[in-house]
Length: 338
Ligand SMILES: O=C(O)c1ccc[n+]([C@@H]2O[C@H](COP(=O)([O-])O)[C@@H](O)[C@H]2O)c1
Ligand SMILES: Cc1cc2nc[nH]c2cc1C
Image 1 (cartoon, rainbow, N blue to C red):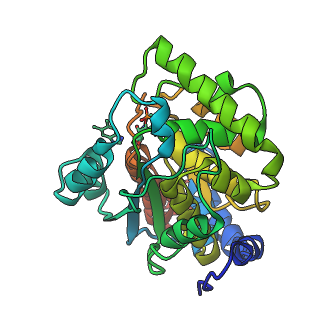
Image 2 (spheres, rainbow, N blue to C red):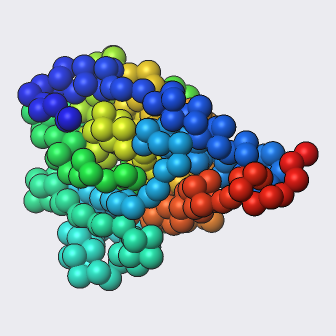
């Protein structure tokens, strides 16, 4: 059951007290894996994936039958600083494209057999420019976290979250810099494709934002309010709800992983139910994945967002589960064991 959220502290408490994997299912899945008709370890990381997934679903022989893809959209006040190669109105235009089935994620979600939901978050009310003040009030942050929290279908057995938000690689970089340290340049990339002058400007904006807010940031939720965005907070809310509901999550690209980082910097173990779907072409994604302790399933040079890389990775997880749950054991098949 998902508790109601009345405050940010409710969120912290729910995340900190979330249930862990079912250890009986982990042991059962590991034992089954050891009996399947293949040399030990021959399915590589697929074997770990299947055991991990079974542990969260409470089954030694799990299935994926109800994956959910959710795309959150938000607009950013920091766009006033000229941080993107595209204009802010593209966010709302792409939401219409999602609703009409015309975006990349529509095709990939359909291919993965996933339900897809789109949540546009107050696109007419961008967050504040974080170089001037906090991006969001505490109330706005709570509303965005709740939008994500309440969007997760409790009967889903796999969750993929992604985003659409022109300008959002800037808050994502600022969140990483504030949470993990280093220089603004370490975390700032080209996003949709800014040129060298654009990248230098964007790096300055990230540095200014972090300098302004760093002293007010004690955990990931503080960072989200100061430097985040509504779609970033909503992704965090959805990933957290999935943790509480024991629904495994596949993380998408740089912005999705920045949202996830805010959870990890709020409660230990907050991302134990999550795997990294892919490594995006955004320069700092590899470093961010390393901070999260996650190895990507795919690395295809994608830098689209929209949950596209994670939706593709559903097929990899499906492959892992199909082998794990469908293969014969040595005894069943009459194949000689080593
Ligand atoms: O997922 C990623 O790693 C990723 C990397 C670069 C860009 N994006 C997408 O591009 C938009 C943000 O880029 P920008 O340049 O406007 O900050 C936003 O809609 C994201 O979905 C996404
Ligand atoms: C067209 C377009 C589609 C996107 N999807 C996610 N981010 C995007 C950014 C742009 C510019």
